[in-house]
Length: 548
Ligand code: NOJ
Image (cartoon, rainbow, N blue to C red):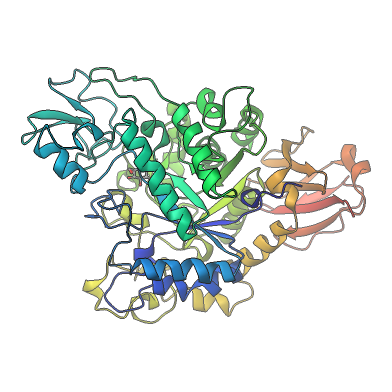
C-alpha cells in the first residue's frame, strides 16, 4: 500500500462564501468554516478543496483574482486562514486551495499597470497583439457568455488574450518573471501550511499563445519546473490539475511518456465523469467499462480524482452527439437545465429524481472506482439547485444546515445573502438539511458517513488496480474489483431498475471469507459467489480477501 496521503484521501470541495456565515453579513467566512470542521471530520473528509479564496471583483465566483497573496476580506483575514489550517490539521484534515494562474482579474494591479503604459514592468506579463488576431472568435470556453478570446484594449491600443471571460486576461507563461511569480505564490501558501493546489485551467496555463494560431504549442516543462519547486518547499504537497483534454494527451500532464511522474500528481477524471453520467442515464454500465478499459496507465504516484458533481456544469462535450442527447433527455430535458450547449447545470439529487436508491448507487459507484473521490458540498445531504439563478450559480446556493431561517447558513436578512437559499419544493431547506439528517440513522448523510468509513477500510480502492470483472453479467450490472497487496474488494452495482442475479463462481476460489461490507440492503451470505442477487439500483461491496 502506498503511503501517499492523496491516494487515500476523501476530498470535499466547498466555496467559503456559501458554506457558513459566522458574522451575519450574508457571506460565508473562514470562522464559519472552522465552526463546521467537526461536521466534516465526522463525515470522514480528509482533505478540503477550497474554491478561490483571494480578493476578487467576483465576476467569476472568485476565479478572477485581484491579489494572490491575501484572502478575500469578506471571508476573513490571513490570520483566520492560518487558524483554519491549524484547526483542520488538529482533525487530521488537509486543505488545498485553488491556484488560478492562467489569468488574473482585469482589476489586478498587474493588468492595470500593464495596460496603462508600454513601459510598465508588467506589460509583458500578459499576451498582446498589435493587430486583430484571425482566431479572435475561436476557442471560447463559455459560448453564449463570451463572444471572443481576444479583446481590444483602448488604453493599451492593443488586443489582449483571454481564454475565459473578457475580464480575465491571460498571463504569459513564456515570461520568466511570470513563471517565477507563480512559484512564489505557491511557496507563500505552502509556507502557511496548505497541502497543495487544485490547479485551474492547466492546458491553458501552459499554452504559448501566438495570435492567429488557435492551436498554440504547450510548454509542459513548466509543469515539471513547478512540481520540482513545490516538492522542494513541501515534500508531500500535491498538485491536482483541471485538464479536460483529449484522452491521448492526459498522461503528458503526469510526466513524459514512459518516464517518471514528474509533473502533476492528480488529474480530475472528466472522461469518467461523463461516462458515469451516461451510464446512469442509460442504466447500462457499458460506458464505464469502456472508460476502465481505455484509461491510460499512469506513472507511479499518478492518481485520478473522480467526481460526479463539481462547481461547474457537467461537461458532456466529449460524448458523441447521440450519447449527449441521451443524457440531456434523461437528466436535463428542459433547455434551462443545460449550459453552453454541452452541459447540465443541476445537482445530482434533482437529476436522479431525488430517488434515494439511485443516489446511493451513483455515489457508491463513484467512490468504489479507481482514484480519489471528490465530493461537492451539499451532495451528502442531497441538496437541490435553483434554476432561477444564472448559469453555474444554479448549483452554488448556500449550504443547508438546518430548518432555521436561511437554512442556518446566515442570520442576515434573506435579501442580504450572497445567493438565495433553496426554500421551496422537495429540496427546500426545511426538508433537506444537515440537522434533520444527522438525527436520522437512515438518512443520506448517515449513509455517506457509513460509506466513507467503509472506503477507509478498503485502501486498495485508492491505491490498487481497478478492473472490470469480465464475466457474463446480467443486463445493467457492473462488476469490478480493486486489488493491491493489502487485499481485494469486489463491487457489484446494478444500474438497472430490476433485480438481477450474478454468478461469479469463476472467481469464487479467490475469496477467503467473502462478506458484504456495504450494500443497499441485507443480502444472503455471498458464499462461493455463485448466486449473488442485487436489487434494482442496488449495490454490494464484498470484501474478498485481506492480508493480515
Ligand atoms: C475552471 C473553473 O472550474 C471555472 O469555474 C472557472 O470559471 C474557469 N476555470 C476560469 O477560471
